[in-house]
Image 1 (tube, helix red, strand yellow):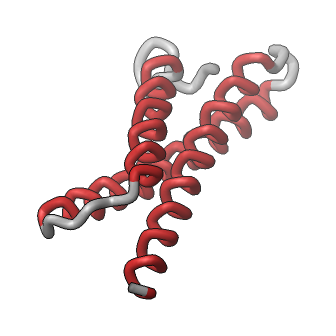
Image 2 (image 1 turned 90 degrees about the vertical axis):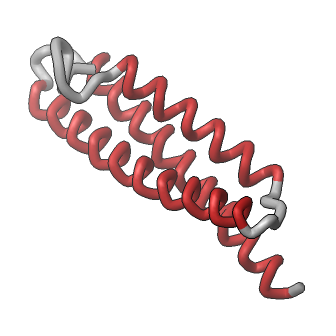
Length: 110
């Protein structure tokens, strides 16, 4: 019982971390888009920070999705909070990728 509770808490913390990373990436890209043209070095730094946060959010989210799928295949129930955090994070990541594409016509610009 104790091991199951610890595993659930660890998954919840990881899901929260993934959401925080995705929100940080969205914020960094937004800041990069709002900065004046004269602050080109700050804009570049904000875009790089946003890209780094986005990559880590995708990595953590991928591990969480794999973990939740493995839990489902073992016919165990995952905590609702974990599933909600994973879905919210996936939605936020999809929104960030659509609004701030990393490549293409507006790649690298907030």
